Length: 228
Image 1: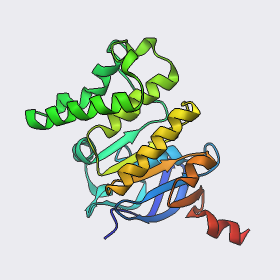
Image 2: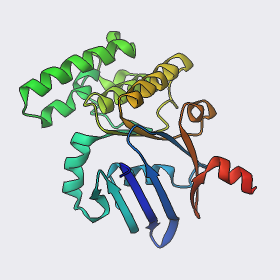
Image 3: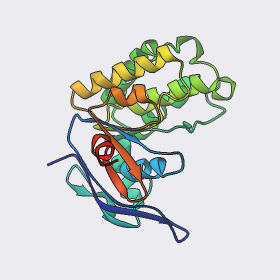
Image 4: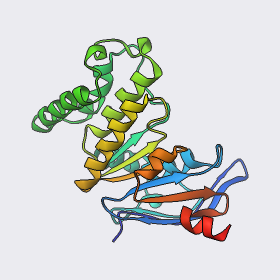
């Protein structure tokens, strides 16, 4: 069974339909890009996949569980252990340092053995993404690109089964963006599923499949191009 199944997903807000008839199946270890014009609803769709929002109608299944039927507190528990969400504007606690923000997931885990493993993984990621010199600085003193790197590390440090990423390289320089994409490829090879919303052709080129989101649905880019 595919890990992520969206079937006839519809999302409305204040009586307006953002998108309708969204259906897609994503297998374990797939790396998928979702493209579309600004304002079409890519972030909203990712919020549904990550369990931050619920669809107005339709069914969303993740790892065999019907997410669209769960309560928000149940979705939160699944997110904390199985889904890593990389936001376009990574939410941070301003008065905390970069490393304190990265380690926020440790606060919700009482297993000391897991926390030691997580701490080691965080240390490795800090070096990989080159933020050793800023980890003791408060978030409010960092640049947008530095905050984005902190957010990426925090989201992937727990080794989630599914990574949902909203324009993850948008605020990054080219060299760091390539590091992120190469690391996504490594995670994919180890079975992690990754779904990315992006405007970048370079990011899309790294993905196994690319879909175009419109108000009418979601379809493979090659299929859409052939129709046009």
